[in-house]
Length: 279
View 1 (cartoon, rainbow, N blue to C red):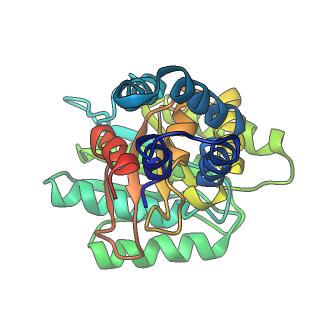
View 2 (cartoon, rainbow, N blue to C red):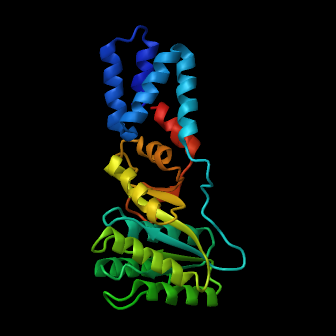
């Protein structure tokens, strides 16, 4: 049942007991909406009741969604540069490759930069994806300077008039400040050649409220322009996209729903909201 199915099934059934309200509240919290957001929905439903209750709840949920653009940036006359950031284990490198594949299928030329030099597996993984996609990958020495890789990549991309440069960045350094300082350095080096147009944060949808904490962490340090939610394939409980936009104001731009290269799609807010109500 869709996460709001139980709520409105109970309301349509007539009198709702205190136990029913508590049961629905718990279901909403378990769907990753968060305690405060779930309680807010219950209060709206109690206040309105009847058919107007569903209308009021839908309106409230819609107002929680970000109003910022969801389409990926595209610059005319120069390379569009996208930094892909996030903690390790969220599917960051794979999402970078999937996004490259999506852009290529849309007729764009793409260059990949393996700037997660502290994790050899990430570099090798991106190189493997690059081979499968028949896209060039710029990499450097193991444990080398990520900013140097990024600089080489933007220089090559700009010189070749490549449509998009996607930079896979490190997900974990020694401390939080190290990670954010490194991301800042990568950005500054790239912008000596060309602006950074997007910073996409990859969040594992199954981590629930921890995903919101990650979004707040990165937003406080780097200018995150959009989100990629991974593992939105049934294992995610459904409410995290709504909760994370409500809490941060950052728009979800893409969702990953599987392991294949094609399993990345643009996020459609209206379709998403409908899915929260319809089984």
